[in-house]
Amino acid sequence: MQTRDLNYHHLHLFRTVARTGSLARAAAELHLTEPTISTQVKALEQHFGHQLFARTGRRMQLTDAGQTALRYADDIFSLGDELQRALAGGETSGPRRFVVGIADVVPKLIAYRLIEPALRIEEPVHLVCTDDTPERLLAGLAVHALDLVLTDAPVTPAANVRAHNHLLGECGTTVFGSADLALRYRRNFPGSLDGAPFWLPTTNSLLRRELDTWFQQNDLRPIVRGEFADSALLKVFGQEGLALFCAPSVLEKEVQRIYQAKVVGRIPDVQERFYAIAAERTIPHPAVAAIARAARTKLFG
Image 1: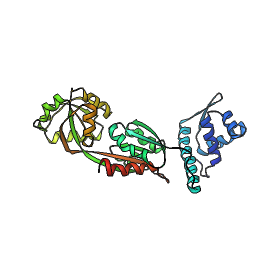
Image 2: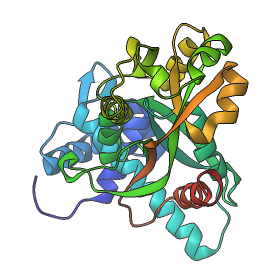
Image 3: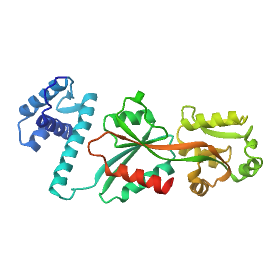
Image 4: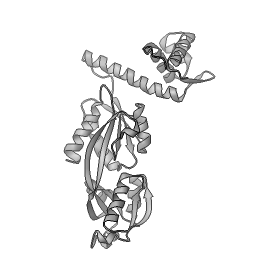
């Protein structure tokens, strides 16, 4: 990539072509000729050293590099609009997008309770949620496709993502089961868990590693009936009464109500932690501060 300054006019033309899908529609919207736009988009491609579009007939399909460039372009022009409104003291034209990635290891009930305060801030928010593995979500954060990632572990330097870790809170773990299983395994807890059937998180999750360590330290050998990456699916299986399952202690009331489960016992030594990971930005999203503040004072306070 060349070192000369980025031409934001070229970037604006590129963004319009990407949004409309063709040179003709972009030309009509911008009141320019197709050759003019095509020449300037090619100049932007030469500046980046990457082809941004794959031209198929009259359609302009974004390449992988084009997808990345578009995400940054959207951020650049969105921040520019916010800057003008802020300095002019004007109202925003509509809700601000807030794109949150939820790691599949984070209970959906926790995710809701963490995100909900962002919907109550003074500035309107248009919420977009997606769930995936922590690794894929952090990759999305790195290219500014996400504003925030909710997960159970902080981002490390090895992830090569410029981001801030916000520890939202931590709590112990509770073992749940159907009424029959709770009655059977509640007595002599936790020793009763030796040989007990369990639905557990997959072995690559932090909670699973901590549970395995705790079982070993207490000389307990549960029978693992199944493993789940998605914590919500794990609870659904737990509801059917074939095995015990675990959930954050802060959610005891909700788990009992929604999944008709009973508390078998509590494991305060197995701590579940929840982090909000936000990309480094000059102007942070106001919803991020609202989430961190509410988590510390209400959910985990």
